[in-house]
Length: 391
Ligand code: FAD
Ligand code: DHB
Image: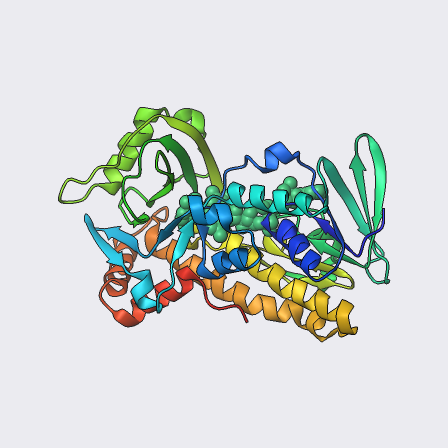
């Protein structure tokens, strides 16, 4: 097979890139090692920045998101048994976030690509990328028991943190920055109506907890846990006892409980790969960087990366200009490091660290008190949370 841009990974990065390129008249083929059903059912992120929402709408991909997603104008920071609202819209000149599940975005993107005649090869395991220094790089992949090749002008590595593209950049040409947190998130879906109108980020001596939503009858909640714990250790009653304890307020607030219909544990890390380019290979999304989920930035960063990359590829195909391609790593990394800092800051402020000494906990509470009383500090949180403008 031959195409202009060979894309490894049908996550938000790969699918949106394919869509953006199509609008510029550039052909692409997307490969993913999972099935369509699997991709469309994997529960992950839920918070879309204002810029992500605006982009999906401008691309004609926002119809279901507008109907089924929930626009939130604020969040609650809860600590020392009291809730404090951060008015995102008032602090950012009217911006907001939309809660709409990542797998719903994926469904919309897959339907749009296939509807426009695009090629997504599911169950296609990319094995290696070759000739990145030449003008016709190649991807080898396994599909239906056969070994196949995809020859292209460019390879987009959108294959997530465990993909094959980042390791294809020689070790001497990349520098990796990593920080692993000593805790994970236990995430659940529960069949119960929303406990609150807005997301609640909670600091508690037993550990962080987060109340989010999905629909009028499904809630998404998370609590900080041991990353090596096993969901089998957590029957429903134990889960709810933990949420009740962490989310308790002085005025007796309790979450709305229901049967737990899905549970999983995710590890938390911060990670950045510099550079994001090697010859004709370009990395985007989780393939190049990971943030802890506290800032709700991962999916949104993937979107920002492919916006830049599609613009750079369009300039190349339209006018033969390479400046934007050359500038891609540096431009993308500016936003990535800002999001890395924000995600680390939110994580540090809200979680209990093993061996936490009382001094550190007092510092966290002082920071939370400042965020919820100083307009300057609240603006800092709000403008990062709703998303800084794309460059
Ligand atoms: P991925 O979604 O990981 O997609 C990569 C794709 O590549 C996958 O489909 C994979 O199957 C495929 N692939 C991998 N290797 C190969 C191969 N060899 N051959 C072919 N295909 C391959 N982000 C937010 O913005 N907001 C949130 O609220 C948020 N909450 C989160 C909550 C949780 C619990 C988790 C786990 C993540 C959260 N994130 C959030 C992060 C977000 O889900 C990711 O950042 C996002 O999925 C990144 O998209 P991507 O396209 O770069 O990578
Ligand atoms: C959700 C995930 C996040 O990482 C976050 O910070 C807020 C909400 C969610 O899945 O709804």
